[in-house]
Image (cartoon, one colour):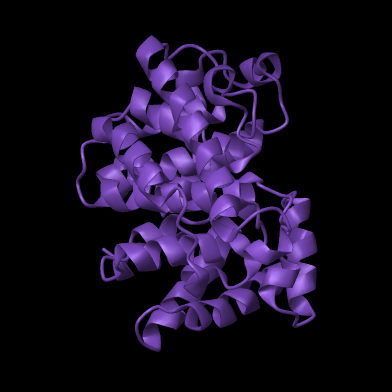
Length: 324
């Protein structure tokens, strides 16, 4: 939880800058400093919204679709209305949260045309709760995406991102992740879980629910192909966005954040700096890279002076302790 917020705050400073402009802030990407006022973006705000909803849902019993949807809808609408929602939030989230505020079914509020990284930049908390079954993690990851981003690629990328955090927190060797993710995607390729998604696929009007979800898994498998090629090249100095994508969409955010982490699996600070010093969606990329590194190494991975001044620190630490 600290790692994703630290990455978010690092990347907030460099988002929308090109590499030459970032170089004026820090000539060497390895030295990019955390701003003294370490404010985060909507990425961390929406992660905390999901974390609160997940905590409240689990207090009522085993995680189930309606038990998660109701508090999550409320948290997302509260975020949409908040005066603190001034961190360049994504338009998909804003439009979908407005529709959620009208009380309509979440499937009607979802944007089936959007696979933006807002779907999976916030999903990390689901990977931290050990009591959840794999099916609960998969279904809840897709549900939380679907409230705003209903594109099948967003659903699949959210599930893969949650499992990446889950496996790292359980001690899986980072080098095993690409093969694990590929096997998981292949296994899930035509599995549409109507228990969690309801009739979302019917809004698509193209093919069966199985064909709907398969399109998303196929795009994520292509992103994993690019990740494998980038890892084989092993060039930590190159802009990661040139290899696996700029990260504005969900499958690229997963692949590029993973690339930054897997190139530097034992150096969490360098991993988030590499993600932040990039030509793409630097805050979301560094947010996910920080989540992966934090899941692997724990809260002590981060410099104390960074962790002490990160915005929302108290709440981030409390959730980390709750699910540790």
